[in-house]
Length: 585
Image 1 (tube, rainbow, N blue to C red):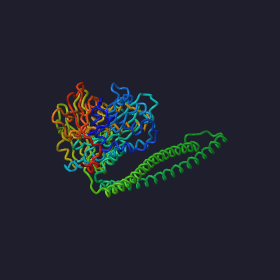
Image 2: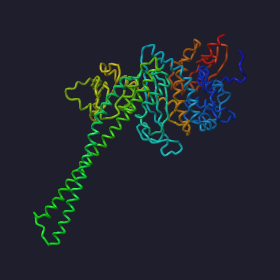
Image 3: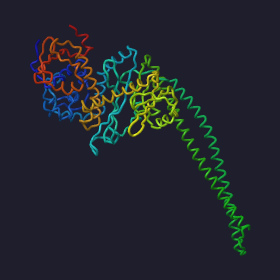
């Protein structure tokens, strides 16, 4: 087989070469070539420089300048560039200028290209999960991305809770999925200022995940109708109360007006008597007409004061009822809109899936819980308000049967419990911890078909499985350095967020692909034993010689690398799977 004279036979970033081959295999390089980026071309196209930014993230480079200033600069590694369809890489400064010039429209176009490449993998995961008769399990969370306090060069950064502190920066809202082949895959990321709160993002997280997966559960429209009926009944009672209170206000206003008129009459009569007594020089005796008139004024003043107080109280009650009625009207209108939308969702969803969401207490408001239930999800969460915890603690006494979960941990559960202010029965577990500082409590909530109260430790363990997304956030920061913002343009910051979650998925897909490639029986690198952290921090930075043959491209790791003596064979074909079907020999 003939080889290109420009072919580079040595690399300091071996697995980046392998990942470039996989990127071509799945059509990622073609997607980047087709991007319409409105920037001038000098030595390198803007598409190539954006792609270089992605490769830098795959390499786990902490800073953008590491592209050119690391001990083994990425932009000097021609073998990596060739593997990713480029003749050479640009200097980091050129990459920085391109990223700074990207518009929101262009960044959204790039993210759409990533989603196009990701879709077949996500669809395959969903198909396997459904084939096994399992539920799609998703987790949502926020990742705080802090910047230097007082910095003024990061647009729309705001102070918010990040890593248990108040910091300046941004929040990335994330959704991950527990896959069948992969323990965790990222589904979506959205960019927000640092002061956004989790409880306001639940619906957006769910809708973003549904859009990425292309599937959704059957909406529980019957529950929405029940809420509408209950609300209409409550509104009828409120309307009656409103009518009665309006009449009470009108009556109080009449009484105030009558009391004012009476007071004026008596005050005028008192003034006339005072003039008469003064003109005649008559003394004011305790039971004289003047004394009686003065007492009559005092009685009228007190009567007016009482009715003014009654009027004020009646007006406050009326205003409170009016506000409640207005809120009920708004809630009813929102429920009707939700019902209409959900009915349309069901009409266009002939093959609904079974799915669940696990969210932490930051998302666990009653409104969010109702929404997720009505959207058709099995829900695992904790309550947002600590008043729920206090209420449940008060319901326990010395006769309560606590189940021992550990040396210092006990739990009690209720099946289908009605909570005040919440329309649906939910499974509730109250957990208490015996510590040196006293007893502490936490509450778990569940809605769905799982018989969680029959195995409470299993319930808690399943909920704690959402630590997978917390581990993913930790991986995004420690391995891909998401917390180190490499750019200061807000569209480019969002692109970095999107590239990081894509990189985490991409490496897992590439690893799965590599394990199914035919390898030499001896000395083959067993990539299955390498975790994501080692793949990025070691595998993407080891040296290897590259040779071409009719059997493919062979990476032979150098004797001074961490994989000395090992080899890795890659296919020569770079056509996407859809094209390879028509390109058989």
